[in-house]
Image 1 (tube, rainbow, N blue to C red):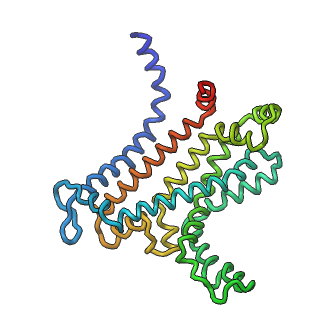
Image 2 (spheres, helix red, strand yellow):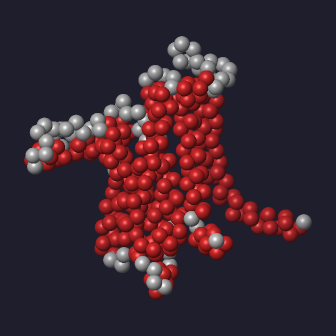
Image 3 (tube, helix red, strand yellow):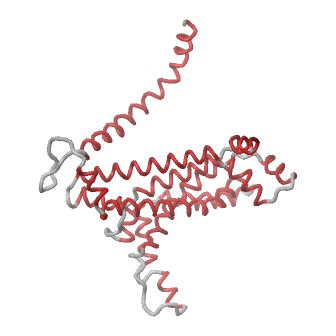
Length: 298
């Protein structure tokens, strides 16, 4: 008993510094989140004013209305596409940052990678408006080579929104992957080559399992940020894009249906958490120890 008390007392100095950020998270995030959940359960009058009492009518409306539930599905589809695309594009860049011996090359790639994070998302989105505008470089080049006769309306295209969101999210995937790929011992890769494994086999059987934490981290970060994105789609594609983030913004700031906006926010949050939990489970299954264990038992 005395030894347990002594061990607990020894751990107090390390616990105290964690109390301040923990308290900040509770006060600044969990308390408002609880208030938002209560707001989502409030009934409303004809002017969307919250009334006393609790009801699940707001959630029923989210699931029963294509306008609302369809926006969640569309956001999910956009987030999946953006996450997969960012992972594919980030892998070679992160591998170069982790394995290159050229300081100049790594510095240039690192600066180019982080440069989008040094500017506002609004500025980057307006940059896409310039690039994809009627007199932007894309239309100018297409007209110059004779591919089109008149400028295309690219700003309202879902593909333009997709490319703009990928541009915003790609640096996060590269940063998450770089740390994980950099932690792989080069001797392990050499051993795989000595044993006769091809580069593709080494990548799939050695690099991917060992980099699984970074891959999962990149997917979770990009997916969670993409699910609620609304600034870039609104500026690049317009406010009529069928995305949940824009529906929430419209409900909260235009129709002033705050309980409805809160309910849609929590549905979006739950869907995001479920997918992130599934990604975490897949990441644990892909860990090297678990893979070896399954192959041994097989």
